[in-house]
Amino acid sequence: MKFTFASFLALSAASVVSAANTIQFTNQDDIPRRIIFTTNPGHRKPADLYVSARSQVTQKVDHGWQGNLYAIPQGAPDKAGMLAEFTFNGFEGQTFFDVSAIVNPYDHNNVKQIWPVKEPDNISGCNPFPCDRAYYAPNDQQTRTTWENDFIVTLGTPDNFRASFVRAPLPVVESSAEEEEEEEEPEVVVKRAAEEKGLPHSFVEGRFEGKRFAPRPATY
Image (cartoon, rainbow, N blue to C red; front, side, top):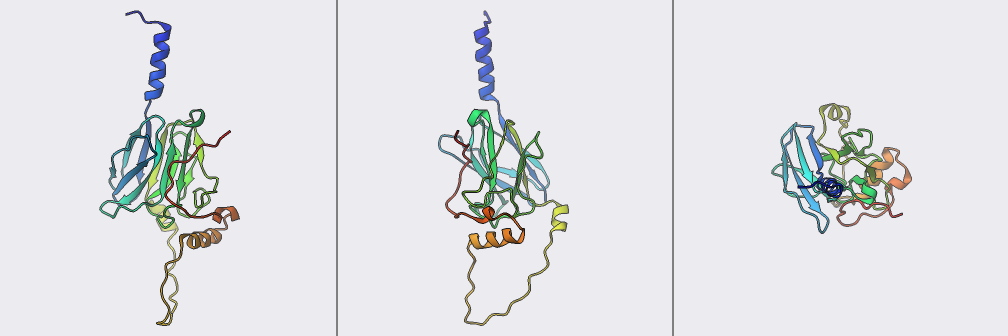
C-alpha cells in the first residue's frame, strides 16, 4: 500500500479527534463516593463511577465532551450538589472548566476542586468552601481555561484541612414556642458566608436559578 503525505495528514487528524480527555477523581477521605454525570445535548453520558475511600479513579471522556458531574456518598439519595463543569476542546481547542455552587451551595463535602494535571495552580473550586474561586451566581466570572486535556477533581476533605477548619459550636438561642423554624434561602446563606470571608461584593450578586450545564466559552 502506498503511503502518501495526504494519508499521513488524515491519520494525524484522526488521532487528534480520537485523543481521550481524562478526569482523575481523587477521594481525600474515608467516604466512598458515587460520581454522577450529566451531559449537554448531543454528548454521550458516561456511566456512574464509584470511588473507594482514599483512592483514585480515572474516567475517559470524548473529544469535545460537554457536561457536568457531582458526587454523593455511596448509598445516599441522588441529589445534585457542588458541580464540576467541563467543555473539552472548545473555542480554539481550549478546555473550559469550573466548580459551581449554584445548584446546591450547601454541599461542602463532595466535589471540591478542579485543576489540569500539568497546571496545579490553575484551580477552580474551594477547600474549604466558600471561597472566591467558584460560581455562586450566574454572573460570576469564574470559568477557567487551559490547553490541557487531563484533569484532577478532588472529593472530600483531607485530614489536614478538616483539623484546621473545625468550627466552634454555635451558641444556643432560645426562642418562643410561637416562632416557626424556617430554612434560609441559599442566597442568604451564601451571601452571609461570603461577607464573613471578606469576599468582593460581586461575589454575592446575582440570582440563583435552575441546573447549570457546562461552562460556555467567551464569544469573540
